[in-house]
Amino acid sequence: MRLERKFNPLDYLIFEGLAGSRLYGTHDDNSDFDTRGVCLTPLDVILDPFHNFKVADSFEGEDKQIYDLGNFIRLCADNNPNIL
Image 1 (spheres, rainbow, N blue to C red):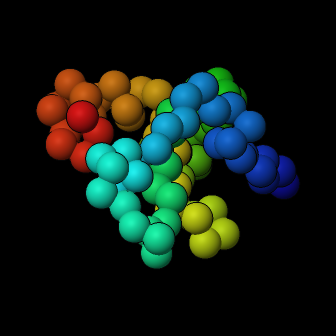
Image 2 (tube, rainbow, N blue to C red):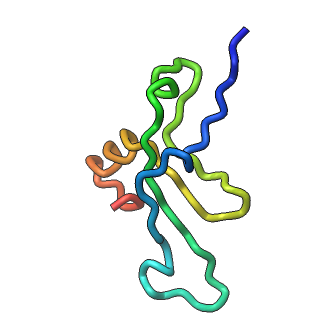
């Protein structure tokens, strides 16, 4: 029997910042808060062949994305415009 580990990227967050209209100063009164972050994924999650974590984007109605550090660096190296 395999025990499923509940991994919450917010517990391993190393950076979180504003994104979208609030970052660029083009927001209005109806604008939401968009945030992007990077987490340091625990080693046991990285080594688990049945768990593949690259990005989390489901946070109870918030517009938030948390990237794995390795995936974030790979996207930066590829000049991904959403990351840069």
